[in-house]
Image 1 (cartoon, rainbow, N blue to C red):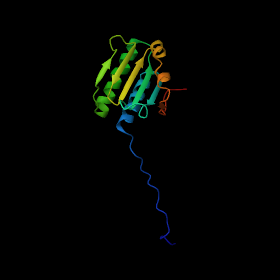
Image 2 (cartoon, helix red, strand yellow):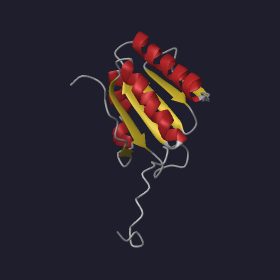
Image 3 (spheres, one colour):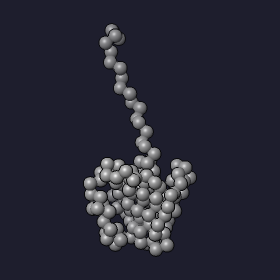
Image 4 (cartoon, rainbow, N blue to C red):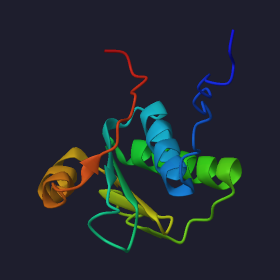
Length: 136
């Protein structure tokens, strides 16, 4: 067998996801684990230099929105070593915004989410495939 003409095997190592994508996927997973509904990740990199991803999720109560935001904070800070840069809306709890710099997480009551319609406002943004673990 002549090995001189053998093709090298393709490199099967995957490039690690950027840190911002890991943050977005982690936030989406945690929102879903807290029974967040309609979890969406929007890739904003081609539309704005301000941030890389939006994570959008809905909750049905103030308590649920608080639990999602607190658990996302814990997962990103404890698990990934990130620090939140800001938070808005926690006291009113109709729309909680968690700012991690390159990832912005929006947690809405359904009516507020529909009113602001971020998915329509940023309709040009690509949706990041997110494998839901929720039962169908």
